[in-house]
Image (cartoon, rainbow, N blue to C red; front, side, top):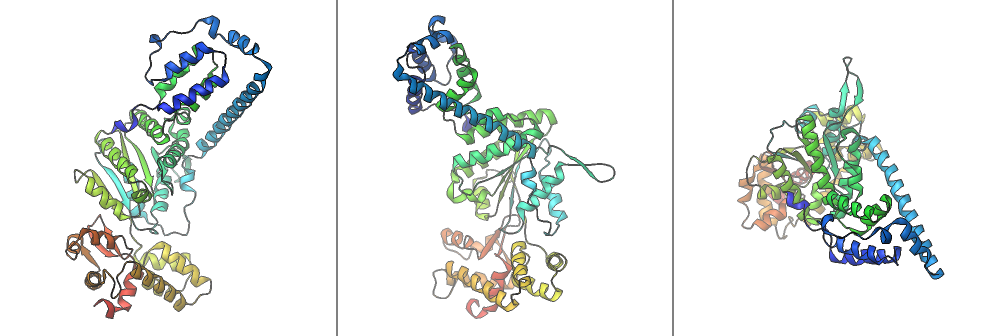
Length: 488
């Protein structure tokens, strides 16, 4: 979907701003102003078709003479402009230093927060490693989903770290190599601008080891072609390279996210030609886009589909909200274009081992906690923290059940509530079978809106890999079993 990265990038209101700036900097240079204004009115100008002012009027010496002949009243303005230019140059220098710092760290930002107390899940990590190392003819993109607190992000970071390691014959890590994977964490407030910042940060972080992205292009506004044309024009007019860069950056407002996409696609082509396999990009926390920026979510999916078909790069989308998966499934044209992997809860054995071996709880207490909260790692951790802090098990249980009751009330699934009757039938059947086929689940509802409402209520969970529905968590099921008189 290359049309997302093309188009006129110079709105008319920016032309007014640029002329104002030119009048401040070179108040007396009318030939320079008129030529530059005409050149900027079209981002696809051709230098050969424009008349270049004479050397007498545009050379640095001529410009300096004209400025020197100005009145004393103009000196404060000239001094002010010099201070502004010095400040901008300083910011450019600081940005270069920061970029160098980012380059040295690369995927360390992705890896550093892995928790040593989490349960190792080698089978899950092995599957993730395979996803992150696609073959050159792959035609599909991936979606990794799972409820909040299942450890998706940490497991992904462990897999990325494993891919980046080079192990010697003694099974020791000798160096970290480039992985061919770009990791982008979608920001909490995902506007196009903030997403662009996160995307650019990820590309800068990866640039040192992959050596395929240009930080210069990421730091600049506008397209690379426009930058070459305008810089050439300004240089012909006797303006220094650094000043031309400053003018260019101030005048053109090319969206950061498009700039990042353009540079990523360019780098992906370089990577594939160099290594013979597609680059991988991981978008984490994509669920943040569902309600705040669904247009960007659709753009990511469309690009994922197109670039997988064209073998340019492979996209991996990570989300906690399975409503994201259902939206993407509804927009898919082929059943094979999107492969879904769900990261679920720990098994009973894994949960007990975590609580006994890593949290040092008694086995009896570990079994009671598992019965209450199940294998959701974040729930296990929080319950263990409270128990180790001296709270009684009964107090922990009552607090959890109180929180669950509030979820039922919010979902309007208690007696006399809007969805109580349909919810009662679903809950009764789930207590018997643990899970329902999604198409069987749909039969309980006369309206799609009601079905979607309950799936978003934190009571039920949709599992796209198996196309089933279950309780959202063990504590939800625990509450339902303790209140059979309400739901049977």
